[in-house]
Length: 587
Image (cartoon, rainbow, N blue to C red; front, side, top):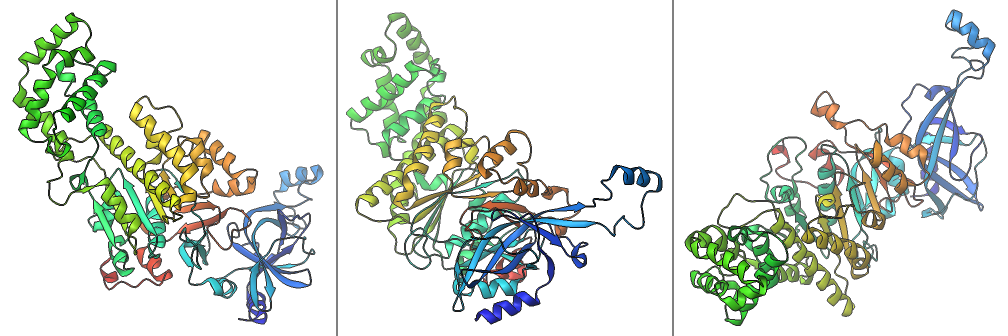
């Protein structure tokens, strides 16, 4: 495409105004033309052409505000007259002026028909025409990068699709050259989960990039298997992954075998095993669990055989030994009380209801089970790296002991495994090129100090990981309902942000203001977002987002961009040229 082609398209685009005064390189004033004053302009993507360093430049940005001024209406005498008559024919409406505010998010310079990123190094002359941008203009401007472009929705309140790119974390044409962290924030019902799945599918196009989803609620696993209940916007995640030839692995609780003695000790501590022996949580209970595991190891009991009855009988006999009891109860009186309860306890009931369900988590003889290490090795070492979802949602299956405390311990084990693999790869000068997605991030990495020691350890691993794993080629995506309740150090380490509806009040808005900085006009536009649940019907529902960071070829100036996510799976698939045979069957 030539410069003449782009200039022709720009000239043919609808004119909405001209550069006005005062303007600066950070924010431009627009004098809106009379033909455009009745149009919806807030959020629209606009473009103007200007001369800089003897070459044509094209600047793009979104209009963040429209202000109406009528200096006659501001005169005290006229206000008194208007109070009596309502309008003054010679003044009202005819003397109105509409001014817009536009923040420039991207500038391209023409270099012999190729458009290269540049910067707004001067303020164009007043009277410079400003045009609305359409898909044709964007296609010509970004033609060299069309294979990298991915679409999540339209420009906020407008028709053009907003071009985004999601590059893998390695080098190469489609690579960013380094890992970075992402965050998606918004109230329940703001569309953040659907947006996260769209982004997941964008990254799934890269064969040499791995995706690891830690799924505490089981939502992503339902989408990957195609079993998610109908309702709202249901993306065909499973079908799209098949179309993209992305290998997919789903690991549930029943497929996960734990492989550490310290994990068994911690799970035993969190269970009701010692509680039913009248031992409350605390130092004594911790010593009892640790001592029992140490003695089982000395007795040559294998971790994978703990579910056998003979292993339990051995453990029960160890707890009955006086020298073992002295480790966690130092006084004879305490040991006597413990032995009284211990002797009257129903050991068969303890085995069936507590020990066996816990020990089965470590039973490697279960069908189709995988260790954490084998899951991570397959993720990181495969030539065509898979998308792996670990479903850690609470199950109703009583054959395996599972609760929130155990879930946190397993997440801790997964995080330690990821960090260890990343460090080993870095020592061998390899990049893992993997995105780790974490749903319900505010619960696992809260801003406050958790009371539970395991949750505190999980949060600390998250904080350490966002600091260190980026250089190993491991990026993180945190999905959270709130911004202020996520640990501040994690929020500040994120490179790309998506903010959905629901962060416009109280501490949430203050946290948002701190991250966005001094861009008050952008925050004003964000506050105009409508609650998607307030729409009259599903067809008119809008999921709006403000994004900050290097996620678009139109945002390299760091200015926030605004979009409305696609409201139908057909629109999402069509915009990204993904064809599915079963698309007609989609709800």
